[in-house]
Image (cartoon, rainbow, N blue to C red; front, side, top):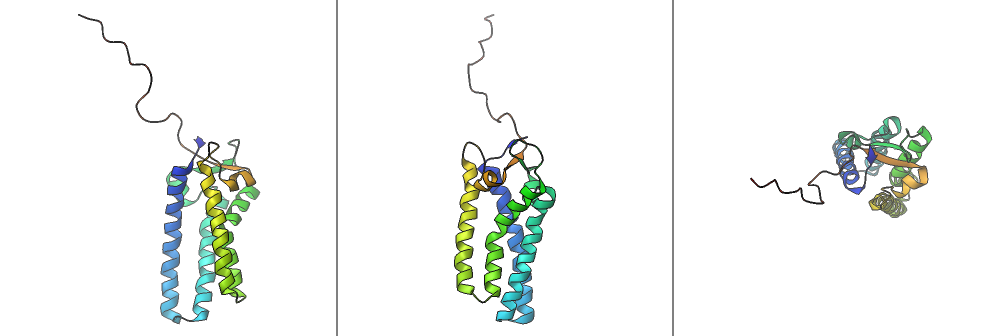
Length: 172
């Protein structure tokens, strides 16, 4: 297994995001149809969305993989390649969920405007952290903070070998 860089990590993250967004959208619409567009419905949808996001992302805590990573046989490990500890996985999950958690908490205390602002800033921090895996080390900023790395299949690059051409066949 080799460390995975930005390409496949983005694909896996997009798959995870689409799945969570789709589930939350369906649940939100159901809550909206049942309760109408009320403040209570928004709060309930926010709480249910948080629960769904925590449960989905929590899979990474339990298995060191999200479903998106599983699809591409990627796994979160320690930077030396050994299995990640539960505390490392928990910190990764909480960091990734921080925009959602803070947004819901601030919404519950009635600070909806602040919730959106803080949620946006934390979301930007998570995004910047994730994009840092484009570096040579292939470590996201949160990987550096928590001592983790994402590993997946690979080894030799695919494609045509570059180098000297083989010698011509002997003349007949």
